[in-house]
Image 1 (spheres, rainbow, N blue to C red):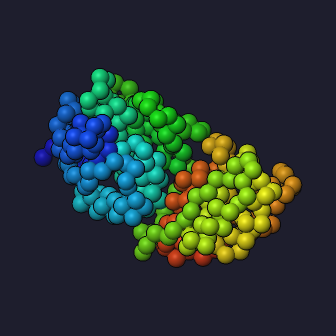
Image 2: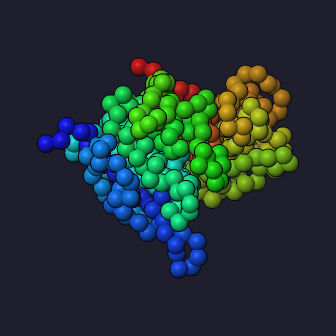
Image 3: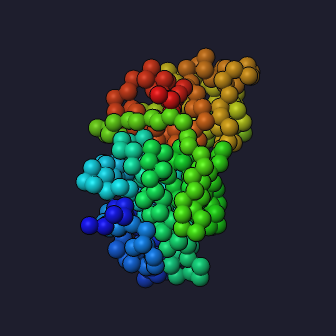
Length: 329
């Protein structure tokens, strides 16, 4: 029996698995087996098992799909895999990674990867990204880091990573920074994030709206979201977590009916808690019952809120989690 780590690759499709489509452009068509077969040297890194879960663009994945994927990852690790790699379209890699980070209880490495340049282009990055991802999933020190995202030879934590460019192979970045990199095929992990937040697999996923409140907005989209059946709302606010005064009546009314969480469009730093006191500031919103999203970006805050509400969390539990998303044991 081989003494190499056993890594399972779960393929969801996306650019990394795309070929020319009859309608023009490219579309997911390659299986996970096709992807693995196209990567030279992969068999020297780990014993790789392969499973095609889906063949869809990343933008077509739903939250229910991601919850089901978390169950599949847990089962795969329970069956003896030392690590798991998920391949998918890059549009939603940060979403998939964040959900897996919250729901997968096993400490074994779970890595999400994809490709910015499809296989029909010169310099396609899919094979290199897959090779690096498998190397990280097979790397013992990657245990206990939560779900990771590996592209462009960089290793990112799911809680911090975001896609910041529509085309560049270096599209994925993290604030405050990557956890490490892959050099000459060897993972180099130099940082370890503190704390973990583990949620049970929810019985369902709640409907949570994400609404931006830019300059001059009147807040009616927030009202429409609640009246349309949203069980929670994430408000993507300005600066330190501030909204136009013209939105306050709508935001306050919504917060009396459902959990409303405020995040910041700055994409770095966190929502303030006590610095400003004008109408629409963080102090004012808190007084109106709006919950503070802290350092979570809007997309991640929406996912966390949907999982909490779907799992039956009440308002106090939701507030406690957002105050401390990653408690240190």
